[in-house]
Image: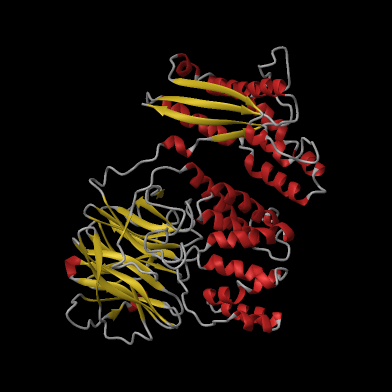
Length: 602
C-alpha cells in the first residue's frame, strides 16, 4: 500500500562510471532495501547500459521498476534474465514477469509465466509458495473469462488528484467528502486528511483537517463519518508504521481532539480502515488488521459497539477472509464491500461484495467485476447514486510514471440496480481443446471420429512422460510441455461443468450458438489437415450429444442450440518455423486444437 516517492540519491554519469562496480551495486542495494526505488533506478538505469553483463544490477533495476508499478520496463528487463537463468540463481524472475503481465491486463502471458513460477514447487504442493502461485493462476483464469464491460469511472480531476497518492474518499454529504492524501516534500512523506467539494463534474481540494498532533510524527488516513452521531473515525499511524483506530466529534472549525479505541489495540500490530455497520439494529466497527488470530496478511475484524464501548473484536468468517489481504471494508444495506488480493480477481486488489450479517449468515463472495481493473481497486463506497473508488489505473492525473500512484475516481449511475452486467457465458467461454498428433485417426469416413473427445483426452494425458522424454534436451521446450499437460489440457470434470451450465441456460429458453473451429499443425498436407480438423470437431460434437443421455439433442433439434462448425486446417497463426519438424515441439502441440466460442441469442 505504501508508495515510496522519496529521492535521496542523485548521481551524474561521471560519478557512476568512476566508481567501482561493486560499490555502485552496494549503494543500489542499500537504497532498494530502504524502499527508495526511484533512487535505485537513478543509480542503475545508465549503469546497466555501460555494464550490460552485470545481471545483478539489471535484476535490481527491474525489481525497482516493478515496485514503482512501471510494469512494461520491468518485463523488458526481466525476460532476458529469465531466458538465460530460468529461475535458478534469480528465483523470483518468472513470478515477477507474471505479476507484471497480470497488472498490465495481459492475462495469457501472465498465466504462462505463473506456470513457470510454479514449476519448482510442484513437489511441494502444501507449501505457501505453491498455494499462492496456484491462487494467482486461478485469478488469471477468472480474469480471462470475465473480460467484459467495465464501469467508466471518472477522475476527481487535478484539483484533488496529483502526482502523489490520493485515496480513501468518503462522502459526508452530497458533493462534499473527505479523503487522505500523501503530501511529499523531500524526505518528509506524510498522509493527511482533507475536505473536498464537488463543483459540476470536478472536485476541488479543501482545507486540511486539524487534529492537534505533530504531523512530523503521526500520519492520519482512512476517514469514515458516522452522521447519526457526528463522529469521525480514522487511522492514526506512528513512525514505526503501526496504525490504530481513533474517533472524534467532527468539527472543521477547530482542532479536533481524538480518542484512540484502546480495546482494539494489539502491541506491534496495525488496526486500520474503520467503518461502521448497522446490522439488525446493532452497530459494529469493522476494520482491517494484521493482528494474531487471522488467516494471513490483513483480515477483516468486527467489534460490537455497545453504549460507546467497543467489545473484543471477532474475526469475520473464512468465506470472507483468506490467506491473502482483505482491506477497505464498507457496509451498506446488508452488503459488505471490501478489497482482496486473494479471492479470484483481475489483478492486484479487486472489489468484492457479499450479502452478510457479519457472523451468522454469509452468502457467496462475488467479484464486483464491472468495477475492477487489472490494477489495484480499493476503498469502494456508495453515496446515493454515486460509486467512489481508489485506483492506480491510468487516468489523466497519472503524471509521474504510469501506474505509480492512487487517484480518486467516481461514477454516477441512474439506478444502482442497472449496472453493466457480464453475460454468464463469458465465465466459461471461449475454451480450447487440444489433441494428440494425428488424432482422431482416419477411419472409413475421413471426416468422422470413432472416439469422443473424452476418450481422446484420456489417451493424451497418459502420454505426458513420452512428451517430456522427447524434449528432455531442450530446457525451454521441456518446461513448456510440463506446463501444457499441467494447465492447458482441460479436464473432463471441467468440461462436464460447462455442459451442466449450458443445459441450465438452454432450459431458461435462451438460444445459444457454439462456433467450433478446428485446427491442425502444419506437419502434413493441407487436404489431410482439413479432414483432420473436421474429425476433431466431430469428436467434440459426439461428446456433447452423448452428455446426460442425449440431453442436448432436443435443443439441437429445435434450433435452440446451434453448432456452427468450421474446419480451418493449418491456420495462419500455426505456420511456425522450426529447425526440427517434430510432433513434440511446443508450437506443434499448441496448434492441434479446436476453439469453441459461445453466443447467446435472446
